[in-house]
Image 1 (tube, rainbow over the protein chains, first blue to last red):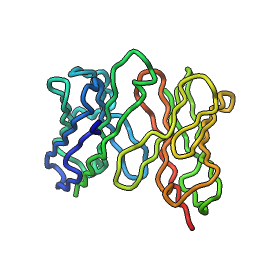
Image 2 (cartoon, each protein chain N blue to C red):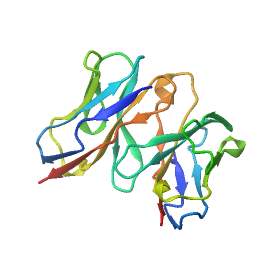
Image 3 (spheres, chains in turn green, red):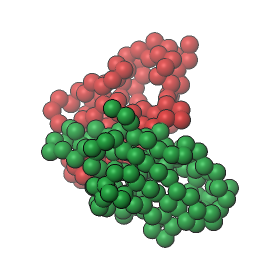
Image 4 (cartoon, rainbow over the protein chains, first blue to last red):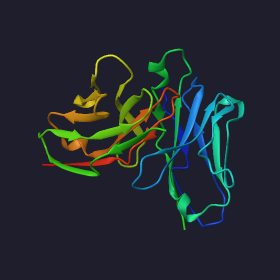
Amino acid sequence: EAGVAQSPRYKIIEKRQSVAFWCNPISGHATLYWYQQILGQGPKLLIQFQNNGVVDDSQLPKDRFSAERLKGVDSTLKIQPAKLEDSAVYLCASSPNLEDRESNYGYTFGSGTRLTVV
Amino acid sequence: AQSVTQLDSQVPVFEEAPVELRCNYSSSVSVYLFWYVQYPNQGLQLLLKYLSGSTLVKGINGFEAEFNKSQTSFHLRKPSVHISDTAEYFCAVSVDDYKLSFGAGTTVTVRA
């Protein structure tokens, strides 16, 4: 099966500009996650979707970050305006929403989008 | 809230030598535990996970980990490493909500 697709792979913007990242999960995966990985740190969850609804966005800085998952498939993460501290790799992951825990913890991560804010 | 501490930020090791990466967690409830590997410019790949059952978990690429509830640890081991094992390794914990909390990572460098 095809993996989680993310684009672009790299993005360089100036502070105060806006940027958007795109994620296409594995076909049929109901749950989609966005994680932020700052250099030297482990990934941190930003938002979790179940189909096209938000399950958890408690760690999303809502004054500048927004995310949507229209039609329960693709997702877009936007930052507006960007700050220097937003420089990070943004990882998208998906998992099926089946009855068993074993399957639901079988995350597949995309290769990520590396954002540099200058 | 749960958290993860990876006790070593960098681990240099010679090829064919054993390696152990240490991970401790804190949580007030039962947890599920994971180890992921990240190769340069790639996403995270699951090495192994503990959800229930045997506390010794075997994963891909010859890795294994042991869940120790009394010591709140989940250390990762490999008896003989290869150059291709050079990567960053992340320990993660979840409390049955499918969200992962990651440690800061351990960089493993395998030398010939």
